[in-house]
Length: 442
Image (cartoon, rainbow, N blue to C red; front, side, top):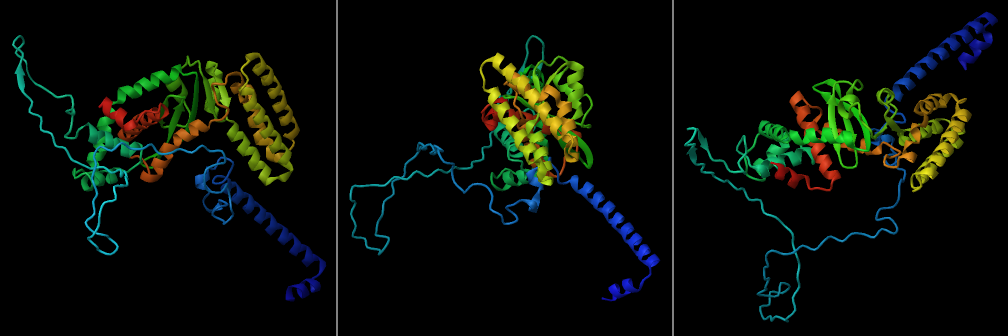
């Protein structure tokens, strides 16, 4: 009330001064708001993964989301395969357990129940290695058994399981050491677990080099990159994925010549990617066909639509184009796919022309134009997927491991990680048991 009286008693000049002061304050608040929104976009935008949305998730807010628990309608289900028993135990009773009565008699019927369990048994093998002399050269040598490791005192089962725990189950080295010490009765320290991983990586590194050679021959490869911290210094982990190969490479930069070094200058396959400029440079320089990621584009348009409901039709239309892309890929006739390709290119051009006038869409329209016909490479060449989701899923193994361990500390740690992650994920793609496969190599 007092403020109102003061304003009523103020003269014209004083009122103007008050209004000007308020306008300055409003302008200041607008700038602060823009600054905060700009900062907020770094943490929540169209590319923010669901794992980082935290308590903004509908479920965390108490809102019901998704379908009800249980299998989807029409799901055939899968019954666990029955185990074959390797021993039998006859279970007899001496008395009625309910009342202790011993006046009992067998009825002739019986009930079978199979229980699955396992035994942990430490095996310590002593190898008595005979010494020999070469009578022709005089060279003295020691006979060696194929199960004896080149270094250390642990056999192939231990070394393979240490790496399985580390790179398949993402267990930290100290927990691996505790598992062997407390469960297997095999005393092990944290540095020993770390050294075992390094020794195995060194031994199987030739397999990693084979992957680097073979990835260049693949018809379709999806690539992506993600942050990797080495002792506080920002680095990047690049992932290259085909239907049968997963290859991880640490790189100090997000860009540079990483694509040339991994895929080479003569790569003839199709490369699925996001909108990062490194891919465009590589494509332009060596004539590589790209497939831009539709999942990224759809997320960005959805994000813009959520901010501005006037863009609902833009979001519906772009989803409709994507559905046409998926249908066109299924056509067996190459000529029909070419026809669909031309129509889809023109339709996307119309979409950009209509929505380029919206300020919220300008960056997206620029992105679409930069992609050009690379949005529809998957229609002409169905071997490449329309999204880069495969590469993003492939990198998830590292993201989970990094969340657990914090960061890698050394160059040796990076080398071991890229080798073992590549092999374990490649074996998964090939439906091969990683643990058994590693034992065979060792």
